[in-house]
Structures are given as C-alpha cells and as structure tokens.
Amino acid sequence: MPSARYEAPRSVKEAVQLLGADRDARVLAGGTDLLVQSKTGRVSPSAYVDVKRIPELMQLQLGASGLRCGAAVPAARIYANEELRRRWPGLAEATDLIGSSQIQGRASWGGNLCNASPAADTVPALLVCGAEVAIAGPKGERTLPVAEFTTGPGTSVLGPGELVVEFRVPAPPARTADAYLRLIPRSEMDIAVVGAGVQLTLAADGGCTAARVAIGAVAPTARLVPAAAQALVGSRLDDAALARAAEAARAAVQAIDDKRGTIDYRRQVTGVLVVRAARIAAERAAAAHN
Amino acid sequence: MSRTHVETSVNGEPAEFLCQPSETLLDALRNQLGLTGTKEGCGTGDCGACSVMLDGQLVPACLVLAPEVEGRSVETIEGIARGEKLHPLQRKFLEHAALQCGICTPGFIVAAKALLEKNPSPTEAQARYYLAGNLCRCTGYDKIIRAVLDAGAEMRGESA
Image (cartoon, rainbow over all chains, first blue to last red; front, side, top):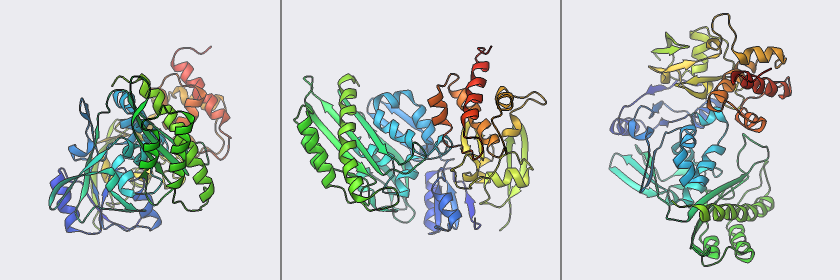
C-alpha cells in the first residue's frame, strides 16, 4: 500500500479539522472497504483518520425512543446486542449478513453507508426503519434521513471535512417489525444480487396500517419504494396485495447486468424477496409488543 | 515517511515495534515482531488466513493498520498453546488430520477458538457459517469442521 499518514483524533472536532485541512484524507472505521481499495490502487489517501478513538462514534445506546449507534461500531457488536435483535430483527439480520465473522469484527454502518455501494446490505434495512444520520463538519452539525444520504455508486452528500457521527433509529410503534432478505450467488461472503427490506405495522385485527419497502443492489443506490408500501397499507397482506407490492418493487428496479446477475433475473428476484420479507415482517409484527 | 512507534500487548505480553504509519497489523506482526504464524492468503479480508483477536474481537489483520493497536491487546496463533500444552483445538486438528499444507490452519484455529468462546455448543451449520470467512484449498473442510465440533465437545466435558 502506498504510504499515508495515520491520525487518531480523540474528538469529533479534531476529526473535522483533520479532514477539512486535507482533502485527500479519508475516514478509517473498519477499513474493510477503504483498505481493500487502497491496496488495489482504487483510492490513494494521503492520511487515514482513524475515528475509533472518538467515543461518540463507538457508542451503542438503546432506549425507549429508539437507538443511537456510533458510525464506527463494528457489526459484531451491533449483532451481539440482544435488545437490538429483538426490537429491530431485520436491521440486525442485515448487519449479520455482511462479509464474514472476521469482517464483522471491523465493518460498520458508517462505512457501509459512506462507501455507498449500491449493494450495501445494511442500507435497505436502515431505510425501512426510518433511520437518520448525524453529520459533523466545519459548518457544524446536521441530521439527515438515510434516504437522502447516498447520491450514486460511491457518492454521497458529505461535503469537505464532514463525517458521519452516528445513526439514530426511532423506536418502532407497537405491532411493528422489520425483515431483510438478500440473494447472493454463494451461501456466504458475497455481494448482494438483490436485497429487500420491509417494515410493517399491524392493527390488532391484522390489517396493515403502515409499511416501508426498500430494495438494494438493483439500482444506483438502495431505494425506498413508496408504491410497494402503499400496496400493503390498508390490506390484510393477502396474496393480491403482496403481488401488487412485488410488481411495484419490480417497477422500481434500475439494475445492471453483471457477473452476479442479469437485469431480468434481478427484477424477478426483487419481487420474490419483497414478498418473502413482507411475510416475515408480518409474522414478527403480530408477535411484537415493543 | 518517518516510522511510527507502537506499544501494544501481544498474547498477554507487552510488545513494541516501529512501522510505517499505513503498514498493516499483519505485516507488523510478521515483519516487525517476527510472529509469522499469522499468514497472508489474500490481503483483502476474504480468506481468513490472517485472523487474529483484537481486544477480544475476531478481525482480519490484513485490514487493520498497525498503529491502531496502540494500547490494545492482540492475540495470535502463537498464544493459543500454553507453553508445550496444546489447546484442544490444536490437538483435535492433529487427531482429525484437519490440515495438509497448514497455511489456513492458524486462521482457522484462532477463528474456531473465537466461535467456541461465543457459542460453546455450535451446530455443524453454525460452525460452518461462522467459519465461512476461512478458506482452505487442501482439505475440503470436512475434517476441519469435525475437529472443531469435537474440540467443542471436549471443552464442554462431553467427549468419550
């Protein structure tokens, strides 16, 4: 790897200063994308700004109003949290799908989001949970829905000197649950061909009163599909409603042909995974007391 | 670029070294500390041959920068045995012939030890999924998995 400086700021303010002063410095969380890209020459950072000594980026707090997860918390720690798994099962299972056990010792939600691969596994799950990010930069702090963060493959709204500090996910209402499914060519250690996240809220009689549907790996960015959600809301999640949601999800596909799948295959599987994820979310929601 | 001085703990003992600021932990372990048990199989976090524990977390050493371990604790394959006394995983790998060339073996043993500490009683599927990040080109994995499950049984006090 070409040589670069190593910095380990102890505060958000220090990190912002370092990033603002050097446009070629890059944030280092788990390094599972950044260091790989450095080794292949795809990126050439002048400095690695290791943010893992900054407390705000490493904390994980759950409470009545929701969860706050620092941008650099490793996936293994997120998944190890029993309460998180219980209250946000889809978000937890998406996190647990990343890479391998070793990669999960390092990979973070912040890295997954900022690397902005169209196939990022945690992003559809974060989208359907209504997640927001807190960003710090030279002009201060701002918060933004995750849905507004990524602008294309590898690109985001982060400006010079800005970094993601934490994720905020609101507490799901009663009788609400999420699910995330992914298709990969192998059984493990691969990149999504299709990812589908669903969050549903059920009334006491089992009717769907709220929904979010998001698809990943089938468009330049992971995306919410409002039309698919609308097909579910007001329904009893019967086959006809699910089929309409699948159709809306397929219509939102804007995929490419590549070695993992063709456009047609990805479109077909998108519909299948949305229906399956909706069924799983519904079973969980019916049992969820939150 | 001037070298960085790192003070850390490796296998329970204080250790220090000089390294380039963007040198990986894998290179520092092998080239600065002479601990060549941890192997480079791919350099991109895909093969598991460089598996080590960092502050109790299983990680790929090829994707950790050496200066990151300042003040932290690292465990490598060299710390698994207690002097001459092999860990049950090491004995079971030998008994079951779970290695041929041995390049993947240190990574598998470090990862399998982490698995059994997290889940002392894994099913075969759980063991295979947990170890999916460790690749072996020689054995076909069957003997490795048997060795891991057998070591788990012994560690639970169950083996015949």
